[in-house]
Image (tube, rainbow, N blue to C red; front, side):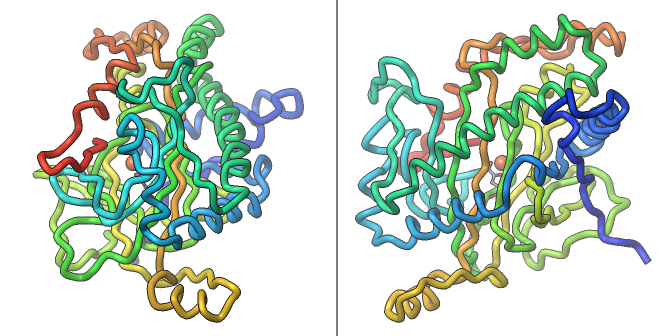
Length: 365
Ligand SMILES: O=C(O)CCC(=O)C(=O)O
Ligand SMILES: [Fe+2]
């Protein structure tokens, strides 16, 4: 019998404090990262030595409280108030592959000096005033994920066999990450819905560090091969064109986040690492988190108990980073450059600045 496929689990522990680990222990981690990026572009990162589970659990509880607010209160921080990027987007306002995604969410970006809401991406983050501790808790998470991003980058540089100087050059492209954090609420997808919870896409940046609540069978990853068992998804169209492969579930694992690489890694490695298609189909079932008061509990059970919450943190290059195939990788593989260079900020503006559909909804990918 074929066992269901599972993405590799990589414990980042040895890289958290290299003075406390041996070079062999670190080599196990960096080799595993390299193999996972060549093979899948996706892996689980065991961060149990870095984060107490209560911390992200609290974040999903705060997100639920926010999404549970009346629509007009959520609209107070609409992206329309600012630069059309920072803030809240209603259910179905985001569009992927021409179809409205069945989710709502709040986006935060690295703050900028001299904010200007008329300039794409250059506005100010809009923090909800309720729940009261939202901002403080999420800002702590941002700091943690920024540090983790650099740690994973260093481990990946080792996995690629980069010399010290090459790592310093790469580090200088990500040491002031133009990060994005998204807090997403997914109500269950109606059976007859023409679309997805989040349509198939590749992430366009560097590293996605995704914490999601314990809901299973929601996030799916496309593996362009056919020797794995498949997660059956009845009646849903393929979104992978004519490419051979299977969609597998990337269910949450306690103590781990799901990690995937974006298109910038594809450029740095001249195509050796590929960013991978993924999507969310949340039919809604097995996660419950019930409010305390009776009245709220009733409303919640009727409307909200099956909401899935996920918090992707996109650890991206610096806004001005000039991203191109790394000399160390070209030298090692002996391959000619097949990717050109991009300034990350220009690339990002191209993605989010002009991605509006005719009815004013926004397409992120
Ligand atoms: O919610 C998820 O599990 C994934 C979300 C995602 O892929 C994205 O926002 O880019
Ligand atoms: Fe994604």
